[in-house]
Length: 545
Image 1 (cartoon, one colour):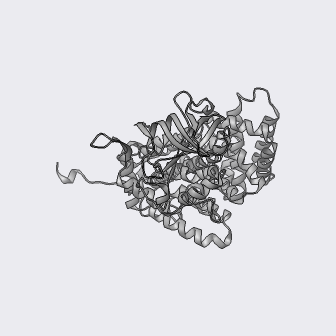
Image 2 (cartoon, one colour):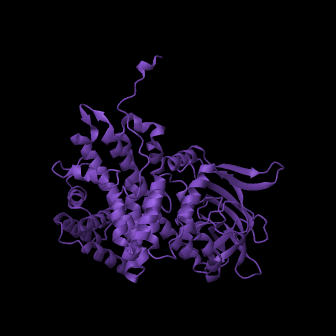
Image 3 (cartoon, helix red, strand yellow):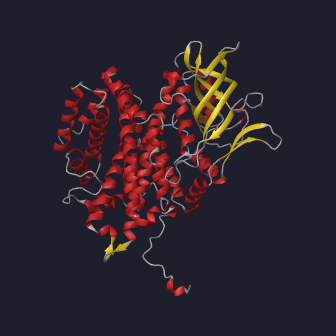
């Protein structure tokens, strides 16, 4: 075909070579708001470095390679010996190694650790989300291990290390380690109390042999795993090392890797235990209580991870519409497209502001903030992860047919979007956890009401939504069937209160009008036309100010 027939025009340049952190105003403002002044320069510096890496063409290529070359199970070596190893593309190791060296498993032992880590996680996983799973679990394992000071002293320095060592060998011989998790079994996913894996105590205190299976074992290439099994005293938490102290492999038979909708770069496995050595974490019978510290931290990462997907989706959509022309002008200037983009930007900013507020509560650590987290985390996990899939789908549509093509990166975001809503308890589990906290811990509700009350009187639509929420909370009739409705209302009120306090007036006004005042349709792009939509879109444009 003649070259003259293949003139390329009106195509959008790739969104690359930019600082993912600096270009996200909602995130940079949150970091400034929640970081002690004396740390701010240091935190901005490390996040800026991470943001420039995440926005580089090289790291974006790593993300595409890791996603395009899923892990492969190597069950046996060439001689027929079981090795049960998972082979990853080199790009996966580069992404994971960079993340570990940037401190994305280090939050518990440094000032402002949770805010800076959450911001880094939000920035870095926009390049590729799959490798966020081992980062999240390694980070989240720390509070569970701290129930056993001896185990914590041995493992915590490895889990919070900034050194990534991929080789399998005894943890004591490594400078850094990763931890996975296995709770669910064939006969029941969420209902872990129905687990059948048995734990037989050995003579040595705290040592057991496990026999059973795990239907979902996340990141099976890790150095160790927190698992649940039935000990003589009931369901108990255990730390299962991949390699024993003498250098031999623990019995850890990987039966297969899951063929998943998204999260393709990350391995999720079915594994079998047969006399597998493990150490008890916490007391016998207290397995759920012990591991809940890990679950709460990973649920927060579900919120942060969804906020990252939303931010990348809206950044790609606005970038595309800034350059793409149709019907005599660029798309971003068309009133209806501007409405869609502004609506997407609102959803993204609300998710980011809420995620960072939760991270700041972890850093605060006061009793009131811990009570706030016990209710706010399941509320946020329910709502933010639920909103991710439709929001990313709408952002993909902004690119038209180009967005439906793999090369755009949008299909990868869309396949990833449902994961965080399912992982660590799907929607019903979160909504029921909200009810459980409301019924058992009135101090948690008081903490949440105090938080939203800080914005009371600033917007009449927010005030009305708070009143409606209190009415809903006072009505216990059919409360379980209304649990999702209640969790949604609480999440929107919490997001609205944070935006009224901290976001620019045009953002807070649009959120309250559409999410709390009801002046909006069921789809994205149905905001009141009288709002300052242009300012909302410009604020979310992925260009550093």
